[in-house]
Image (cartoon, rainbow, N blue to C red; front, side):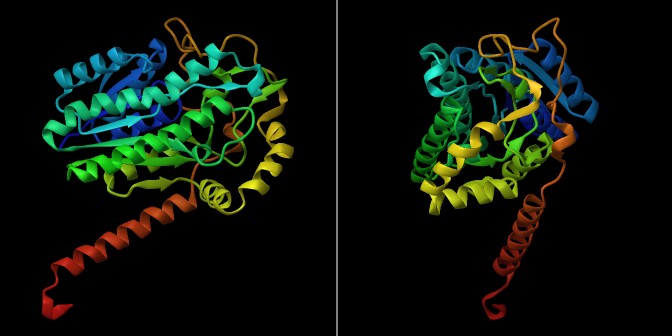
Length: 330
């Protein structure tokens, strides 16, 4: 059966890779983002992969725009089966160098954008008692790092609100599922688009993974949404686990290493407004695709994610076998 999927932040990075992979499944994909050239590029990739694309210029910080996009998606593609929240923005700077307006904007996009997407999805899924929402989170939603206070705060908030909502859906016995994928450092164009006050070019904290690794984790979660959370990449597992047991030690470690590890010493710092208020892939600007500028450092695969998928397949296979067996066979 053909799926109808909505992806926010679909013009680049993880969202772009997710949209393309759903296209490979011949899904109908509504693409939500602000950048016209990025949306056009994403739509072309979805169509080339075998899917159907509907690009919709949308600022997820504005609920009215998100709701209108959801209405357009259902009118033109049919009932939404899967909604994937990805869109985000950030400011790389010490907290005291971030203005109140900048902090608010990061929060509106990176946190409230997920709230708005989830609201729009639930308004359509709950009456049908069916559908899946996937939140693209981050290991930084558990373990904050310096220079990204607004982004880390927003990702922590996404975890909190999603957990609350999951309990509410369970309480009413809803057929709607919600799950989260906590991501590692990913090579996306955002690190060249963010507003930054650092002396060198921002970079993801190594080791870095390609967006396709993240996208495979999202599709795994969409296929098996009753699992409350997925961790993509061995570094995500290590980061979240270590923060559970030695958060104070990590505070001191990141105080020593976190500034340097988030800057590419061989690249000059970013200058300009970044994409905080206006998209970097607007009409007339180049389409940057899914990948950022760190291809030479990024891993195309994750052994941890592959193993997680295989373990889940075996577990579900055994569960089906057990439930099919009669009482005398158990």
